[in-house]
Length: 152
Image (cartoon, rainbow, N blue to C red; front, side, top):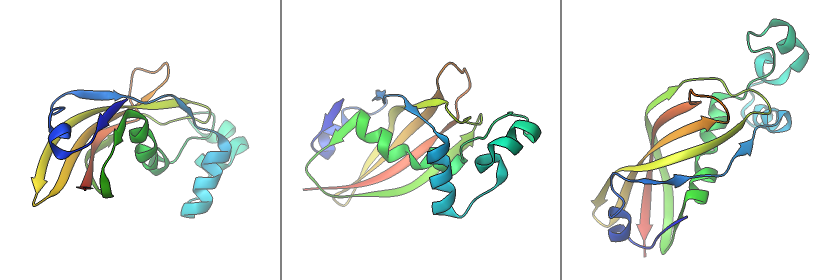
């Protein structure tokens, strides 16, 4: 795990891979809970029997937004950003879904520091992220996550 205590420390990682998170198994329970939270109960996510019969995947799949919502969870496994007043999710750029995440697949994030700038005392970090699926060559998604860090 990378420890980052300041903008200056963060900047030393520019252009480098910061690390890889641990694997996380996507369960049907997690998919169902996400469907409840987002009111997205499309059958490809929540109906295993119908998915088995009608889906080209032959099983349920995770919501694309569920996989994106795991970015902060995985990021905390890669880096410990300390001395903060506040951290804010700022946006996503260049996002592309490459492959569906099937129920019971395991996923993890690989993260690089793409860019970092000081905006009048606020650090804007752009992290290039790949969500890998265990035993698959294609990624679930690739894209850039932007965070604002207010260091003490």
